[in-house]
Length: 56
Image 1 (tube, rainbow, N blue to C red):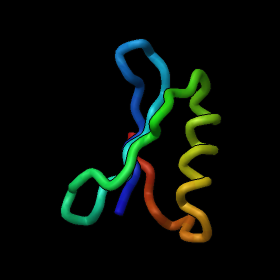
Image 2 (cartoon, rainbow, N blue to C red):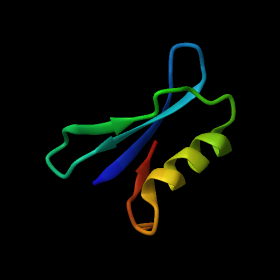
Image 3 (tube, one colour):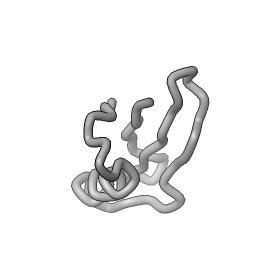
């Protein structure tokens, strides 16, 4: 599994979680103004599995 962090068309931050087979598992239903806030959302989903990589 891995997270993809990106900016949408309005330059706000979003994330998508992909499975090992590269299929979308989840995404941020909302966008974030700050990149750090987006990382906070990722960490809420990660839980104790902090080893899931984040790619930009």
